[in-house]
View 1 (cartoon, rainbow over the protein chains, first blue to last red):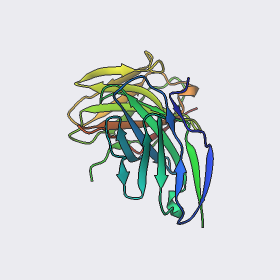
View 2: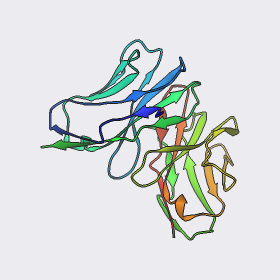
View 3: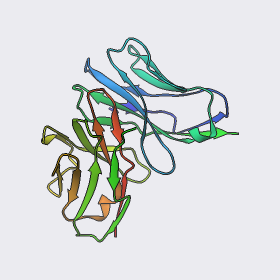
View 4: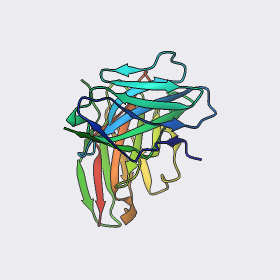
Length: 115
Length: 112
């Protein structure tokens, strides 16, 4: 079974609108972390946001927020007020167990922001 | 703002040659990682390094691969005898006391 599932290969959003990118995960660990990264066409992996499994509040970083629903095992990324520069691939990732553990990535969602 | 750096940005090599990919993690970080991304695919874990030794490695990380932290700042990935299927983007990442893993800009390795 896939550990991280991103069901949207591609998404379109109008500039200035909000968009939600879906991510579900599968783990039996109690302690884990969830991550979102942005990969523009230039190729680098830009860290956006992190949510620990014990964090009670949803993580927010500027225009990014992580909608963490533990019972549903989902960690959707919400981007508010989309900008043209948000067009990129977005990857959800999970770290199981201890803090130093590896990340397991999903297949990614390609977001296109339309003017 | 501190960042992970990697050199070179692009390396072209012939099959069978050895390559060394270099990384300078964020200075006070404790955990170091190598990942790779074959073109058009998702990012895959290769190896993690903590306290001067490998803490975990994937099945991709076979005897052809090795990692080293030769001094207090550099972290290297060596591929002894490259194969065509080693062509990929290789990312170094590091993690400090918080949960976040920060990635470098990547080295694009092309094996011909």
